[in-house]
Image (cartoon, rainbow, N blue to C red; front, side, top):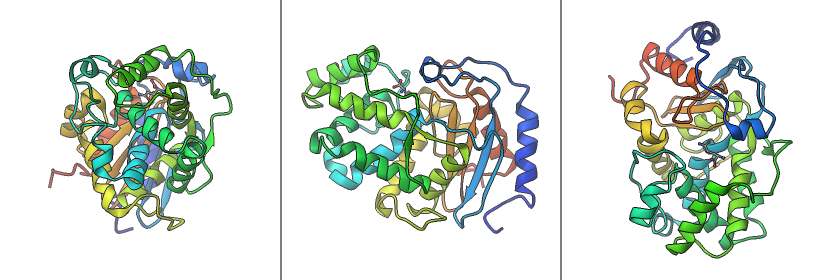
Length: 310
Ligand code: GLN
């Protein structure tokens, strides 16, 4: 139990649910509605330690689309395949004050600010796709599966047609215009869409976070998901950019590398110790689960997990 600050982690998770279930602010995202995931009361919490203990409560078995939670993992895959220099010729490492699906900064600077927002993740997807159009999707799903500790699956209602993703297509076209990505915009967008519609439950999200906390090795299967020397890159970008335009206040209040997705999940990494995950689908105006933000804030404070608070 050495990694756990609580002698009763299961009881603590139950307590979190009781404290934050009354929060009913926010609304379900259109991407979840399109997948038929429209149950606003869902609420799941989980934690996984680097030595393989997993605890979960309430809706911890519900599969949902990971959406942008895929972004740090795809970034890690690109680092492993292409190296830092090539990846960062296509995407910078600066936090942004714009929304995750903004085109503004791209228009101004011609390079995505970071890999945690749509423009950066689309640039990474295009790199992967153009390097190997036939097997990029299988390579990506295999990578996600190594973090989850099972074969990665897609949402049963996900489709490969990206013709209606107008905003993301606009980002992709701007990226093509500035010669950040290659010609096959539809192929690149399909890969981006596939990573977003991979599914996990919160227990698996906690294990994905715990794999990063554990230097890239899955705590239960012992499989390596990412090169050890790239884990720090991923965690740094999650810390500075993972919560988009609220990354600063997140760093100040929660103090952990994290990533959210519009499916309603947020995962957070306690380096060297554990991964935490919360799922509830109602979102605030930044695209973060309202209950997950509140629960992770309390959790970090209660267990004194923030990285710079000694
Ligand atoms: N699929 C979503 C999109 O591209 C993912 C965004 C998110 O989770 N923040 O808009």
